[in-house]
Length: 253
Image (spheres, one colour):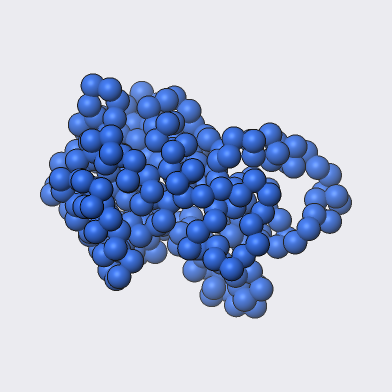
């Protein structure tokens, strides 16, 4: 259960090897989060995430197999997690991939994989988990979206559209949950310097996993629906959404 100061005591991460999610877990554990469940595809990165959460001081840390694209197993997955660990205060939706657009444009199968991993799969998993959150009467989703979803650019419209879909889904889910005790926090970072973007030139107002984590933990106890990291991007993209299409198409790739 969430403690008297509003801090979560348990967290489920969908996409447990996510670098941003691990940084969030570090801060949650430092604030006395006791149970960490890391859901993801088994492998060295998930094992490293488990070791990191244990080193941070969590009392219970376990990994569970999870594939965002295996939608037919999401209900059973959610039931097994809640039946085993009890109430879950916070669910971080962090499953995702950063696509390589030139390759994706040449292969429709790759496009479908990006959309399934970043949008349709997480959406399915969120609804499966939401059944249990509604039943317990409290909890919050933290959905890792992206400013790339605010308005898709020609250089990354496949990734951008996948995040736009997830973002819109999370907004609608939030509205549907009013009065249930369950909330949604949508996080829209800019370019995050980390493992997924290694070798890429950082965009203006680039951020880091640690900076995103700090912003998320500050916002968890608030009524905010959407946060941008860094905050200036809220105003940057508010302006970008108003650009005429002819000008938008000439934006640097």
